Structures are given as C-alpha cells and as structure tokens.
Image 1 (cartoon, one colour):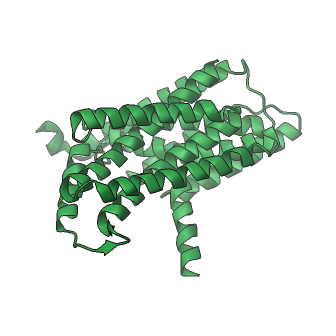
Image 2 (tube, rainbow over the protein chains, first blue to last red):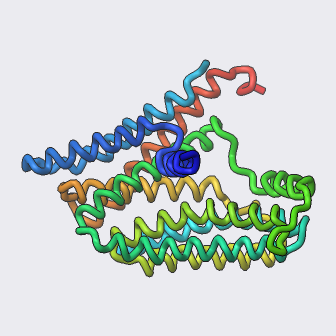
Image 3 (cartoon, chains in turn green, cyan):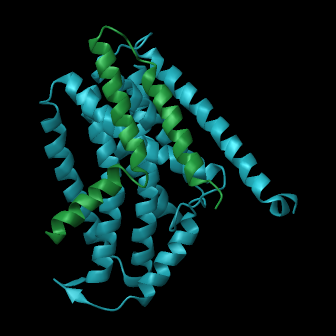
Length: 66
Length: 251
C-alpha cells in the first residue's frame, strides 16, 4: 500500500506540481470549451484566457508578501 | 510545416535542458567515484525510458484523434504551466536561477562523502544516483516526446528532436569535461514552458471541439500572445519585488 501511495504521489507531483488549482482550472476551462462547442459556439479563445488568469493568479499568490 | 518545426524545436530544447542536468549528475559521480557504475546506471535508465516510449507511443495512437488531443492537450497544459510558472518566478527574481556549476559542486561533495556499498559487482551509490538522475530527467523528455509525437502523429520526428539534443549535449560534455554551465538553461526552460503551454492550448481546444481561426498559424499567434503576457507578468513581478525591498533596490 505504501508503494502504491508513493507511486501516486510521484505522478501527482510530476504532472500537477505544487499548485493543484491550476490543474483544476485547466480541467474546468476544457470542460467549458467542450460544452460550448457542443452548443454550436466556437470558444477557441477560452483556453488562452484561462491560461492568463490561472498563471497570473498562481504566480501572484506564490509571491504574495508574508 | 509550422507544427513540425515547432514540435522538433520543443522536443529538442526540452531534451537539451534535461540532458544538461542529467549530465551534471553523472559527471559529478563519475569524476569522484569512477565511471563503470554510473555508466551502467545511465544505460539501465536509457533502457527503461526506451521501453516506455516503445510501449506508450504506439498504444496512444489507438485512441481516436479528438480524444487523444483532448487528453494530451490537458496534460501538456498542466505540465507546461508548471514550467512556465517556474520560469516566470526565476526571471522575476522570486526563485533562484538554476546554477549548473553549483549543482555539480554539490553533487561532487555528496559523492565524496557517500559510503562504500557493493551490490551486484557495482558501486551501488554511483549506480543508483546515475540511474535515478537520468530516469527522472529523462521521464520529462519522454512525456513531452510521447505527447507531442502522438497528438501530431509524428512520434519519429519528436524522438529525433530529443535524440539530436541528447547527442549534442553528450558530445559537448565530453569535449568540455565538465558541466555545461554556459548553456542558458533558464531561458531555454522559459521557451519550453511557452511551447508546451501553447501546444496544450491548441490541441486541448481542438480535442474539446473548437476550431482555431487560421488553423496552424494560430499556434504562432498563441505563442506570441502567451509570450507577451509572460513578459508583462515578469516585469510586474520584478517591480513589485523591488518595491517591497527598497533598501536592496537602491544598493
């Protein structure tokens, strides 16, 4: 069980890294693009916008004084 | 054509920068404790990485292209944003720049202080440090090669980009007989983060059902847009850091 946990932890750190909110934000943004696309709306601009928001927020949070 | 060129560039740069880090580890151990065990460790890690590419690469091609691009796009976005965020933090002074020479000195000291343990006729410390170093640095390259190669249907080209960089770094390392501290690693990592994130956006949106205006050309627009944003963010963070440390800024 310990090895399974360690294996899972390794891949979590490898892919997701130190800020899980970025990964969650990417998943939400992709789901929105898919929902909008299935409703006939071409939301190609949504992902770049999400990248800007998620990166900005994550970096700003990490560099917040105190 | 644009895609192929950028794909080659992304795997070449990612492989190059990871190979430089792996080379530092192997060199530090080899110089202090001898070459046989670390080189066997390198060979063992290379075999594991080759098996991962050989198994996962063709297996991913069995997925429908839209599903594959959605999965690969999501993974590349999450993974690429890690690289990009770290590069932004380094460039703005919030995270120390990677110093290959300092890493080499640290690894060498650790290798000198480590105890002697023989297993299977190998210096176990040298073998495991080299094996782990090459495997961990190589895993990032393998991840990028497989995701780029499968989403674009150009696994061979992606692997060629990575292999070319690896050969270049090994030859340069042998000629220099030391760590390649003059390679602009931090700049390259910034470029790789930008490429991974841009490709992730492109394939992720396509996989989710969106279509890009201008098709392939929009990838260049994405790189320019995200590059411009990152540059502005670095400037803003630098200003904030300097404003918070007025004494250091005026010194």
